[in-house]
Image 1 (tube, rainbow, N blue to C red):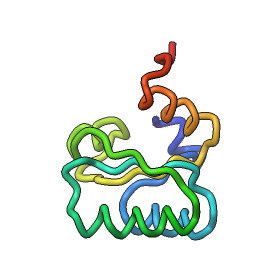
Image 2: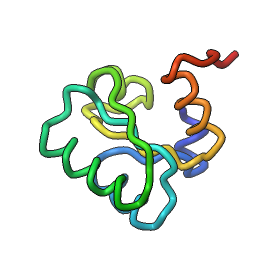
Image 3: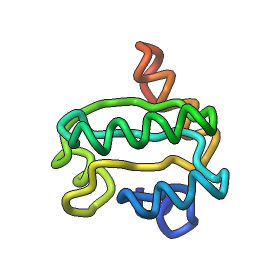
Length: 97
């Protein structure tokens, strides 16, 4: 994920992800299952408006560790290939590597 962060392929945190969505950069949004209902509702509405799929998975701690950050409840995936692979795995498809 470090590579993805350095090359602008993901965004994280509510403000950053929202701005990236509005710039039409985000291809997939990942929300922590334990994020607030307000956050979930807000991003589901925004993503519906911009036709972006949303996955609710894991908890805030797990998502944060996956990107090497703390207390991040939302991740915006900007790389189309990565977003497709994540969706595939989430839907029971093959695991990478």
